[in-house]
Structures are given as structure tokens and as C-alpha cells.
Length: 112
Image 1: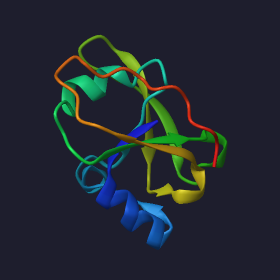
Image 2: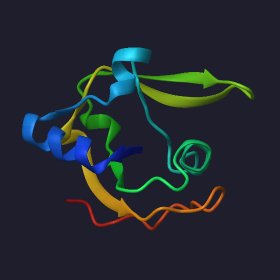
Image 3: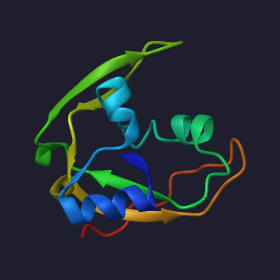
Image 4: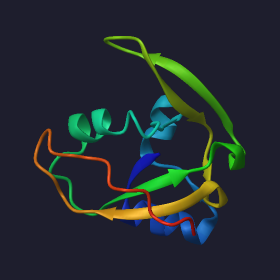
């Protein structure tokens, strides 16, 4: 899973690949497993407007997917070392802003 800005996702749909600004800085795209997404959502995206949740099928990824430990507890999160091909996104959900600590994973949408 990945939390994206709607404008970035709309651009990716035109080009066929998604490359958020953090990719150039960190060298990878932050992803989460469904049981992990609440942590980055609440830590980094509370009160953000215009977000969309991307459901990613790992088997469809074209770039290298690695599970790296993240501080402070060493929990392993998936990181995509390259752009996200749009064809790997099997569903999307628009998200309304939430207060700090208020994000809860919505039910999985139908696969598109």
C-alpha cells in the first residue's frame, strides 16, 4: 500500500509510472503492508487533504521490492527501489483528512 497525493497519482496515470518526490531523495518509494499502513498514515499524513490510498500487488511490480528495517523498532517495511508501474496498482481509495492518530484502514475496495 502507498499513500499518494491525488495530483501525483493523476500524473502517473498519464505517464504509466509513479515517482513521488521522495524517490529522488531517498532512492525508494515507501510502501506498507495493510497491517502497517496506520503507522505512517498517522505519523506523516494527518490533516493532509487530497490523498489517495494505492493498493499495490507485489507480484506486478517491475522495480525491486525490498523489506528494510525502520527505526526506532526495526520493523521491516516494504520499499520499492524504482518507480511504481501503474499496472501494479490494483485498487485506489480517496481519503478524507483525519486528525492525528485518527487514521484507520478502510475496507479493501473491489480490485479494478
